[in-house]
Amino acid sequence: MYSIPEPPYFLLIAGLLTGIASGAAFEATLKQLVQEWHQNRSTRTLANLQGMQLLVPFLGIFGGVCVFLASGLEIFGFPTRLSYIISLPLTFLIAWLIWTQLGKILIQLERGGSQALDLDSY
Image 1 (cartoon, rainbow, N blue to C red):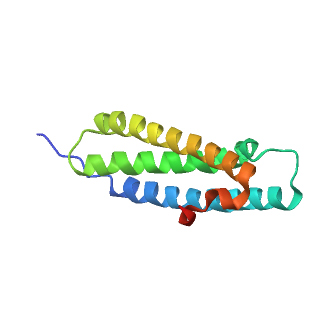
Image 2: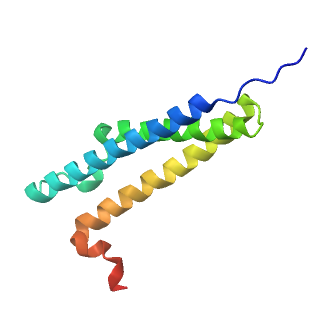
């Protein structure tokens, strides 16, 4: 007899909550590091702030989003293996694009201050 497995609702919620919690930690860490850099104007460049302090919560976001996406695909009937084959490269690509864009924004912020990021002036 063939039985259909239960959809992974628990993993869907766990992935969502992991991504949200890691995102909050990432935001707080980034704000703290930029604020410390702004107050001290240390020789450390802003682009070098992308160290382990930011990478750990960023990887938490990556993992949470990947599990959330894969679980969502499984709920719609995709097999588990195929769900992760789709969600891993997709999440990795998006995470890589965001990480490189963050580095570019930090360099731009360092060179021109907060006025460099003022989009209303355009």
